[in-house]
Image (tube, rainbow, N blue to C red; front, side):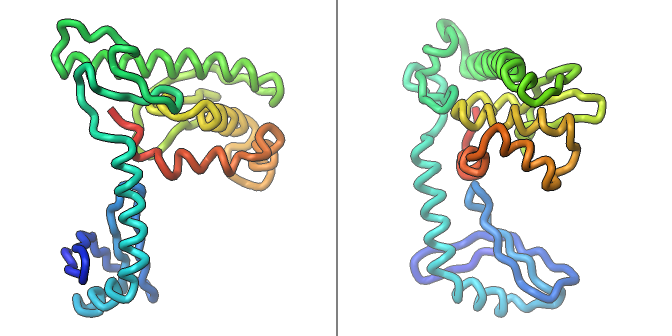
Length: 217
């Protein structure tokens, strides 16, 4: 649904269901989802959005500014890409001479995957002794929803895009997954264990929550 407001328009997805209350959610990319009870009229939804216009506009503007700060990805000498939280020209990360845009993108992804796996192995060695755990295997993949995962078979997997984040966030995910080797859920014992390594783990989470959607190729 597209809703026209005084200063701007909002494109949003309306989700109907068996619920009593209305929820408005804006994800990290600026996409708006409105969850409403079944049989809610379009006019009721429009009135709700207008009532929250200032808050919605402020949040969407904030996300737009964040997106602008990360810039558009261009695969040429001017292309800038993140590595451990800092921007680099693409030719500082990989050799691009004679490559097509698609080849550059493929090689850059391979670069990130290798660096992510190498760094994860290095950081795991640093923290596994402190936590008294040891994974059986480390893997790297691509996920849209997770930065890391841990199986009951003691296999830890990291999202290759994590290598784009600052080291503080990278280390947080490493420790988070190592702690799952002792606690497979997110109960108090789990968070106490994470906090025993990083008392500031909530601060380390913030970067990924705020900017994670923009860590892309």
